Amino acid sequence: MPIPQPLPRTLDAWLKQLDGSPLPVPAENLLKVQRMLADSRRSLREIADSMGDSPAIALSVLREANRSGQGQNEPLESLESALTRLGLKRTEELLKRQSALPEAQIPRGLRQMQLISEHAAQQASGLFAGRLARLWQEIHWGSLLFFAPIWALLSARPELFDAWEQRVLLKGEPASKVEQELLGVPLLRICLALAERWRLPEWIVSGYRLLLNDRRLLVKALHIARDNEHPIHQRQMLDDDPALRRWLTQPANCILLANGLTLSAHFAWNDSHNLRWQRLTGLYLQLPVDEVQQQVHRNAVQHAQQQPPQDLWHPAVSLIWPWHARHLRATPAAAPVPKPNPWREACAQLLAQPSPFGNVVQLTTCMRDAIQACGMQRVLLLIADRNHSRLLAQQHAGLDKSAGALSLDPQQSQVLKRLLKEPGQLRLSPANIAQFSALLPGALKSLFPGEHLLIRSLASNGRVALIAFADQGGAALDDASVQAFAKTAQCIERALGNFASRGRQADRRPQP
Image (cartoon, rainbow, N blue to C red):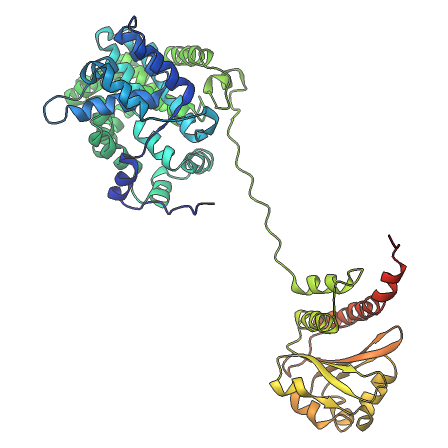
């Protein structure tokens, strides 16, 4: 599996990654356009319209045409003009270089953003093309391609769309904060830089420049647009600000309005952002907000009816829902992964049946780990020989290396003799250390200096097999750890029984 590369953090790094990044094209759409190009009966208008059904193809053709004319020609505004400049042969060669994929393999975030762009083109046509008929191509292609820089971003980093939906739309985090954290630079700066580098239509470039560098005009227009119920007062306020009135009437604003309406509708029709764009559109068209809403809703339904069944969201669907319903839901937080509990894991291994241990070393290693995990810092396990005449160190932790070579004669210690006789536990503390210290071998006392110590003999089938020594570094033993030590000892004794019966269990297995 490839290791995900870190996101770029500077504008130059983003441009380097996105400028040359190919946009995937649905294989079916690419084949359809190639057939149109090969059909000599088709007009440029028909070919351009077929390309409009695949925004990635439209962008590639217009971008290539404007790049080929750089330095000697003005950027083209429509796809028909781009086809004329490139010629059909060069267009065919360009399409052969496209990255064609089955639609299901194209990132969903990219497809969703392109659907928003197609919806914006429908809104622009329904709201403005009739009033500005001679500019319909500029309106259509400018609206469709306005978010093209974001297509490139989502093609390279499709996970950013879900992050934007969750953090900006659902959680209401400031877009500038989210962009800075995710991208390192404002999204509008990336969009403007790509639009200029690709020589996209001037209306697109001017829209990004307005949003990035001259928002005061937009803010002033939005302030006037709020007074939608008093159109006469609105006209008076515009008359008092000729610069604002001249800017507001520019045809280039059509594509900004259409994309603002559509992008905000992706979340909800009655969201405050969508209402602002509706009011601003009403101010531009000199229409009441309710009439603008009717037209926008009608355009959305018409566009949705043209779409094939797919896994993308179209805001027209929510028009039949309760007004405050939302299609977006917060992504459920991943269930916290429980932290491993070494003590429980070691005890579970000790209690497993049949015994998972292949030899005594494996078994006693797990015993030592379980005792340490229950809160003990220093541990020593002495295993008894068959005649209880010798105690040999089997495992230790937190002690000097010399503990590994320890060998004791239990007959030299009344405490050890008593513990070997039957299973039992002795807890040393300042209250009894004077009584028992003299009864312990000096080698043991040197390994466990202090006045607090737990000693427990552990039996298998009623016969003591080993003795465990444990403490908390010489500090006073806390009750919780002492209780856990007792439970661990019970698990160890069951593990000793399971281990001892392995051979008998194997003998009882049915023979083939």
